[in-house]
Image 1: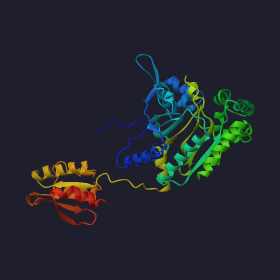
Image 2: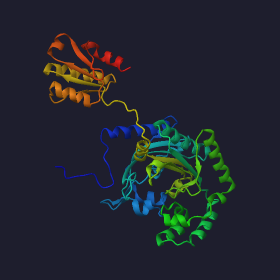
Image 3: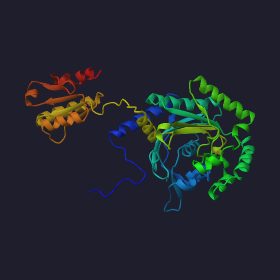
Length: 420
């Protein structure tokens, strides 16, 4: 009896479902690797201050959702709730921005942790693929990242997703908008926590998902009416580049995302087949984050795409990914002498790039063939004493049922030829 279960709000990835998750991660990362993004991996925990400064002390992530711990030495740490702050911290610590080739383009994949109410599409442990372009202020870079995400989703066969786009302005034009928004929000009937948020970061109130709050936000000042000329030109250029690349997007003036560090371009990928947890990914520009965490001015942009959410979106659309067979050839030995010969053949097949498995445990023919069929293999290799005496093994096509003898020294080439 197993007395342990996975913690609430988490999940285990096991075959065969894990193969789909791996395929999704690969598809999300593939366009990045083709576009000059190098892989980075950061620790699963960081100093609490990295997230409180970078993500924002007024955000739900910092105030309600971070898993924190104190080490025996008294250091306050947090399991990473998102990837951008960690990646930027690592890039600054390693002086990647001083290598002379900006932007520094990085991609990553890993698990993240937030203490949230578990529900479909929202977990306390979740998987993301992310990308960051650090050290350049260029609308083409913003457009590139959005295009790469769209291309990744399309490569998986997703069609029913939408791209939401907005500009949050910059340090030149946002103060005036902040003041106008605060004046509007102070006149609403809001709870004390939300009123405190008005004073710290009023844009976060626009991201409130509660219907009672959203009804009151009708008529709120629009950020687009307060953008400075430079931000208007920048945002229009992003829109032009996306349109030229065939990316259909929707302008969403209330899109602010859940993190304090965003400036100018912000975007989200939505799939309406997921119910209330409809966001499958998102990101934006964060030109001031480097300075917030003690680095130099490094304008940057990035995104994170949810692997879990993307898998759910595929299921919602009924998309079945074409996954490579975990096993292509299954070896069934009859007798000890055949076990040694077929084990050597399985090793040779694997080294030749053929996915092969073996009937371990001394199974009889009937049970071994059942295992071969359950493995999903296309072919079975069967051999007994008579076959070995003749220098052959029996190659059985498990789809057609056809069986032919093949010389021992020709098995690897024969199977490589048959798999095309």
